[in-house]
Image (cartoon, rainbow, N blue to C red):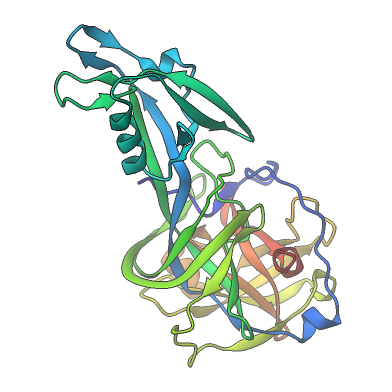
Length: 337
């Protein structure tokens, strides 16, 4: 499994690297009255790709020569095989089993490419070395990474995290079918420096703390486990961007172990109408955080921003040319999901 980057680096002049648009979220009196547990805990996300994603094409060596069935069928790197012969494929195991059932007969592969889906024909070839039927693909069926939980609703335990889309190394937003969320312990930090984003290094602890059902341009969403211990969690009400002001604020982040800590920041700019949900420019001012991380690093995306005792947003991006500065999303844009 590869690790997607759950905090996207930006420069002062660059547009958001995760392409996506949503209208400014609605915020009414009912939303303002809801209580939220403040997040800040780092979580490990294992994301199902919803099929068998093609990450490479290769030869199949059989008794009678070299074949490339997938390439001949028009399959490309980045495609996702989601069914074989009408039977859904959700994992590598599912795909291998379907190819074995073919016994070398031509099969119909349902292939997803971007937002489009098409059926293609491919003829599996029996590999000389293994005796297994193959079509000449390297695949993955899941991804893993780190991110920060922004909030958990106190009444129904629905959560929001990350504050931006989950992107691959080519900056393409990813879609998922299901996700498991694990407790994560931060064991190290690669400090951010000018020109290179830093990174939190975490260890999945194996404890399933939540499940996620949706990923979109504003983050990852789902429900926390009823067994999660909220006894030490602070609660807060949310406030729209219109109530945010330039000046002091705090974020909650985990940069060591499993416990979030509060760190001081300054809000340098407020832009309620930004169409890319870059509603804040923030600057890290806390000397402890600057010493440990250099500022904002990958894995901190989703860190809740609190000002005047209200949840107003979440950290989303870091400026590559100044890791002490970054962007934040207004909380109403996350709550609208």
